[in-house]
Length: 306
Image (cartoon, rainbow, N blue to C red; front, side):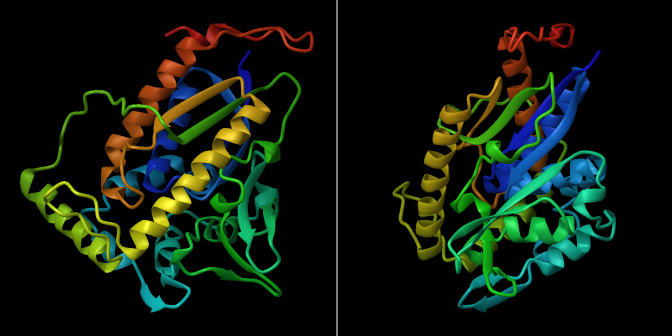
């Protein structure tokens, strides 16, 4: 019998790609993911998993350097954000069809924040791509999503680890994946498959993107904060502390920690490495997990055999 698991995926920009490796390892070890809840990049990965298209999404991420990632970035330079995000999601829709959340095979929840009405918005029905677009609208980077009477931005500013919104079922365990953990970077040895030329070209594109955001990376090692980098760091700090409070309050059965220093918010070119970092972290967390009886239900242990 498979161990049921309610899965919660935090936001964290490109670090959220590590969620893919975690999910793959959970499935490999025999877990049955019965529900998923996520914020920002956690909502993206959780959404494509609920759609049954995670493999297609992962393969696409691995080719971003080959299909010119930045051609998917529709800069607007408006006062509300630099990037619309529509071109990116429309591209994903070419290989992952949209669907209504209520029609998915497992319960899915995405979180956004309504900055006009000062409240959390919980998506449990309607278009999954609309939910994802709202949940990933990082303030000042992605333009917000307008509603009839509100304006939606990244859910990370209000609930970056939405444990309280994941659907629970009898006999399940709660697994939270935190990609903002204040722990050292821990990654396995990863075979490099890119050529030096390909890496050089992609690094240039990343540098160009950072320049668009006015983020400075001086060679003398002294950190200077540009406007958007300052905002990004402030939002990251806020998300970090909210995540810690959520984890302390709800005490998940398993916490998979991914270092907040694994990569920068926009380092999507590290997709392959991040997936393996997530897988590695999941292996360690599962090995350390000690099943216990809760509310008279004996936990299954066979799935922990490595």
